[in-house]
Structures are given as C-alpha cells and as structure tokens.
Image (cartoon, rainbow, N blue to C red; front, side):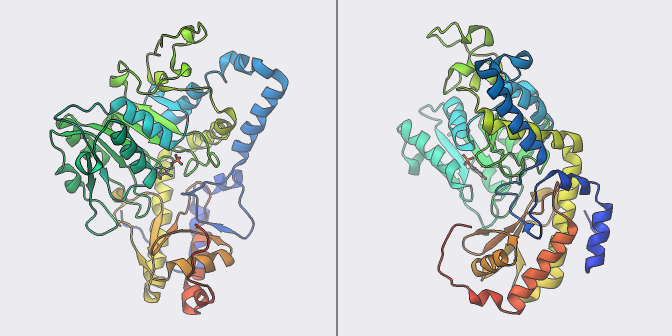
Length: 427
Ligand SMILES: *Cc1c(COP(=O)(O)O)cnc(C)c1O
C-alpha cells in the first residue's frame, strides 16, 4: 500500500489523533519518558494482565484445591478457555488450539507427533535464518531417531543473508522429505513468508508443515482455515504481551485429531477418564489430546487478561496500525537517517513483512548502547541489526518520531563513539 507521510513532530501528533488504537495504550504500563521498542522480544505488561493474575492468585488463596472446580471448571479447563480467546487470532477452531509449555517444548511435541520417517522418506526442511531453538529441537529429534544431520536435515540457504526465497524452499520439496518447520516471520529481517503457498506446495508432495508463529502471533492475522497447516506453535510473551515465560500455544489441524500424540501426559486424557488413573492412555478427541501436565496457572493468567484487548480490538485493526506505523518509521529512516549510514533490512512490501523494522548500521552495537542511555529500549542482533518494533497496541507516532531524532543525533554528533565495542551483555 502507498502511504502518505510528512516530516515533523506536528504531523506525528496528527497521526496520534487519527489513531483508532491510541486509547489501548492507556491499558499498558509504559515507563514515563521511555520509548519501548522491544515489544517483539518481550511485550509490556497491562492492567488486564495484572488483574487476571491477581484474580487467580486470590482464587487459589480462598479455594485451595477447589480452584479446579470453581466457575464450572473454568480453571481446570483453562487451556480450553484460552483457546476460545486465541481462535480469532489465527482463524482456527478453539478445539484445534492448546496452551501449554514453551515454544521449544511444543516444537518437540509437534516433531514427536509428525516426524514419522521411513527408509525412503526421512528428511526435514528448515531454513538457515531460523531461531536457534527450533533448529536444536529438529536436530535432537533426528539424533533420537538415529539419523545423521548432514544426511537428514535440509537447511534452506538465504541468498542475501536476510531473507529466504519461497522458490528455494519449494525446490527442495521432494519425495524424501517428511516434514517442514519454518517461521512465519523471520526474527531478524521481519520477512513474512508466503505461508499459504508453501503449505499447499508441501501438501502436494505429502509433506507435513509446521509453522512457528513466534514473530507473527498478535501482530499479523493468520487464516488457518485457508493456509491449512498441519501444526503450529508460538510463544505468548512477544506481541501477545503475556509476560516473561508466559505459557506458549500450539495448533493441531483437526484432520490429525485421530493421530496418536507423540508425547503423552495425563492432561491429554479425555476428561471423563483422566481421574480413573488407568495406565492406558485414553487420548482426548481433539487438540486437547496433545496436552501434557497440569496447567501453569500463573503463567497463563496474564494471557487470559490481555487477550481481551486483542478480541475487543480485532487483529485486522492491529495489523492495519502495525503496517502504518512501521511504514511511518521506514519513511523517516529513508528521509532523515540514510545519510548517516542507516539502512532498512526488512522487505518493503506490506504482504512480505511482519511487525518490526530491521534497521542496519555498521555501528549498530554501539548505537544500541547509546539508545539505552537516551531512554530508548531497542533490541540488538549480531552483527549489525537494531530491531525496532512500534507496537500497534501501545506505541505512539510521536514516540516513533522522537526515536528517529535520537537515532539521528547519536550518529550525527558521534555519541556512539563514547561506547566500547566490547560486547558486554545480550541486548
Ligand atoms: C522467541 C522464539 C522462540 C522462543 O522459544 P521459547 O521456547 O519460547 O523460549 C522460538 N522460536 C522462535 C522463532 C522465536 O522467535
């Protein structure tokens, strides 16, 4: 889409006045004077999240073990209740969604379920730009099954070090491939892959497709009825703002409800048989069969609260603002910062980018240190990337404008030269 922007603080303020989501900002806890650009790593807390966390603590305090029975088993069925609130974010049925574990453990669950190698068909496709934990999980599964990584893992190479070409993925789809695990949005460059195309091509070859939605859920709406993936996983602490270590999510396409779960636990039993304590697993008939153990109530509670905001506002308006405010940031970078050595590393087209802007600079590391001293919270990724995520629910256009002014000053006035190149902490 073509956007019309102007330079200047007044214009930023005008955009804030026109912003339909400007009021949701008041539901989040922002630090006065700080520009938070790291919501793609750890989303901010909200009053909604806080309220549901404190509420669940109180239910435990007053009810003890009876917590599982109150409100018609609302907490015993907490994953199911959260699935009702998550379904619109990916356009899936609630019984295709569970809330448990971490992204990493849910990838293991997906692989344990869907990686069924045979003599002829045993390879897994991943991409070389994916987040490390996804690759560790895949490699450990190949190890467990006795395969050699060099033989059984196909790692799609990037042509430019930033993005992955869909054609390169599709060219490796062959009869020896069982499964593909890819991120919807790449964590460094913010590239949004064509999930529908890749999934349908893979299915033509009988390949199972798993998507990692960590960098898209809560930022990019997905239509799983259309994409029709086999499984998906995501974390809840990035754009979903459910807190550090918040319980993750998993999607199992209904066409697989008849499959045996790879990893089993007693919460995967049918409700009526769970407490019979039989040693024979009686798998629940939908995605709930993939649950493992007792819900992590306090890591799920904030998600329960914050999802109310997502459902009130709707993913379409979140995406509309996200695309608009990131386009505004790119406009300012192009117009004000390119002469200082800054450039944009994410794809430009709306349908090819997620929720953050990938800002590149040879001095990115020292600039990111200077940003912190200027009350900006960025996110640095080796070797030259500053990820900037204006969040639809709580970032203002004025903050984006001020951020760009600070970025300009840091290089123009050589502020970054006050910092050492020696890496101190992970930012
Ligand atoms: C953030 C992220 C993870 C994190 O995994 P956890 O198990 O939730 O710590 C995994 N994969 C991707 C692609 C991510 O962006």
